Image 1 (tube, rainbow, N blue to C red):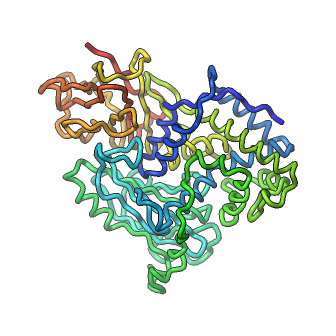
Image 2: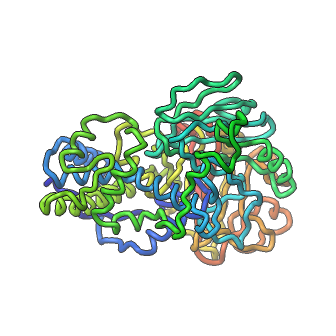
Image 3: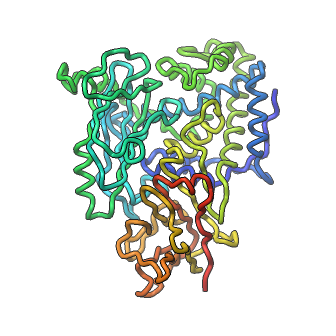
Length: 503
């Protein structure tokens, strides 16, 4: 059995970096928040390096022992399990209402910006509104209609069943132009209707995340007008061959009278070896992406595959190996979580999300801590929990973020700095202000063109109040959101400035 690193310290700072990468629906944040609350942190000095982890993964991938194959299967299948459970949970009508809940193959949109009373998700944002669509493409394609949006940032992210970002529409990807798109699954070979553009989807289970910039509460009607012009419809309904209620695709929403298991990371390893049965069921309609015959053959050698139930059919030796695979797979995923991201000027920056190829360990780690993460070209979300001296933030102190002239975050979309309390929610304050950024009304630059953001608990005075981001009286952290970051952000030639302690 390949040795798995025992000393793992899950770094909460990195967890929050990846979490902020989606900033939308409740379960995706509650998922990791619950994991943080329930998982015991083992004593350790430092987690394994990326090089050590990749060496271990290479050894496991080349091993033929049942324990190593079960470990590989757990890591490889982790995102698929998370996606299938999320689909079942969010499309079930008995699920307690959360953002993103609703029938399959429809758009389910948020209509209001959140404030400090909002506790459904951790690390929320007040920059965008979301529309979520969980898709099942087994029966027929879906038709997505998108209006022209030229006055603001919009993105439509497409994820397959393995959490790979397989397509984008919006400001960056399609110029915000109007379009009608046929979203077709891997087995559909029909004729694409005239005036539609096909979006080929590598798996039948897929997910759309739509984000639209909101320039404050007064701008909400404009965003609602955009949302009203967007639609997702089964092809047969769009062509008038059937009604929405009679559409086989739409009715495939989970209608169990029981609420499915929450798609929380903490609930995955505790499932036990029945997890591999669940994996086999999810594989039936979701071809591997990327195709990997070697992985298929290895999994099959211990009874894991489409429709297989190794928890029932395997012998006791294999069942013991499956249990080991869960334990060792979790350790490796947690170790990868701990070293995702690079610390620069006190900001942790992660540029490894969205497109994974055969890097199954990173794919699993991101599925665990940043489910639905954008690719870096779409958005980056550095997080800061310490000042320039490496000390944790405390509201008894005053801080400043100083952007030199011409050095505000270089983005083609927009940027913002958001404040969070120790509970990972907005901080309730007299100004009802939770972020500062490109679209903050009244934000004032200095005479030389530089920009100072004042981070403190007490009002800094009328001359600075426009640039004040109120902080709690105790601990806090901040997220710098950069939508459509410029090349100098992606290549590291521009970095966020350190947060300086003042006074």
